[in-house]
Amino acid sequence: MIDAEGFRANVGIVICNNQGQVFWARRYGQHSWQFPQGGIDQGETPEQTMYRELHEEVGLRPEDVEIVASSKHWLRYKLPKRLIRRDSSPVCIGQKQKWFLLKLRCKDEDVDLLRTHHPEFDDWRWVSYWYPVRQVVSFKRDVYRRVMKEFAPFAMPFGKREQQGQKDFWRTKR
Image (cartoon, one colour):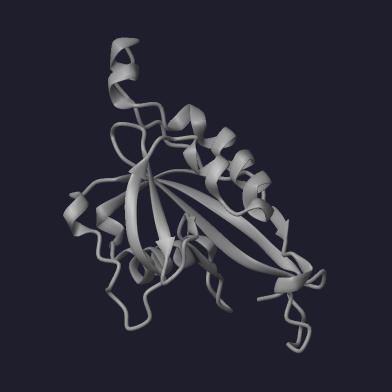
């Protein structure tokens, strides 16, 4: 779904483990790493899209994760001119994204990047919370910085919260 301004509606997914690390995936056959993301289909809610993309790209099911937070606003980025497909209609100039912070509730071994016939990713790893902001492709960097800043209060490692006397590490916010 591309809006009147040329932005494709999309969801982004930040998966966090109990150590406050985030899931970082390499795009299939490339040297580019990013968070899982995907377009919203007609009639789909952002949450439905998130679960569909989670299954298609990471091989996880709704019971494998817990929604901890979602972004308050749609975050946008423009594509570099060289990536805009002028021959498509309507022309997509960028993405507007609703983001979700998920807590992983299953084992790392349950991640299955080859669940579909056309995998999006061919490798993944856990990285420190702020690492993706410095490593993502430059045109997505501002969106990553904004979403990670918004989610930071909900992604503090479990041990640190426990040390502060707060038993509930994963405060839910929607």
